[in-house]
Length: 235
Image (tube, rainbow, N blue to C red; front, side, top):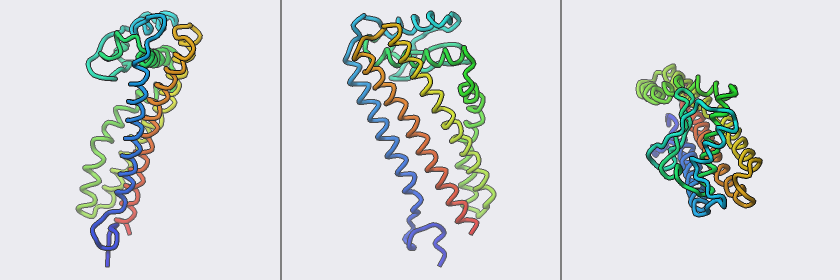
């Protein structure tokens, strides 16, 4: 009897356990960052700086004058765009004086500094993202065709395309951790935050960084599943 990857003939694909595990890991990481941010968003910095103030101070201190700071809608949609040289702070961060918001703003400034200094992992990630987007879009349709029609090469091609997504997520880790390290060092050395305020900012950025770790682990689990499916189809 050919189970074709199904457990004990009941129609259950046990490789789904890997997907579920990845979802659980990402869910825990997401809840952690939300609760940590909520905790420190209630603590205002003693000097009364807004996140936008801090971003402007950090960029000026780094000698960066060609980056624009702007507001973007949404909650924690903050990001730095290397192509446009725009640092965007979300509505919940831009005018906030909380330790959490300042940590986020400083982190995005860390990316701007990376860009100005030609930080190699950032350049590598920026170059790989367009290709990874193609992989993210095309991988599962190609895999599905391969599984439905018994075309093993299609499954392999789909897995290879998804591997590009994993690669970008892998490269993202040093980019994010380095940006946070730069941010925390600047906040402390410039006395922007005081004492326990720095610990609060570190807690927020650490929680945020763990979401990238969780995303990578989840994608690795999905890639493992795809490789297992490919192997079973071949056998």
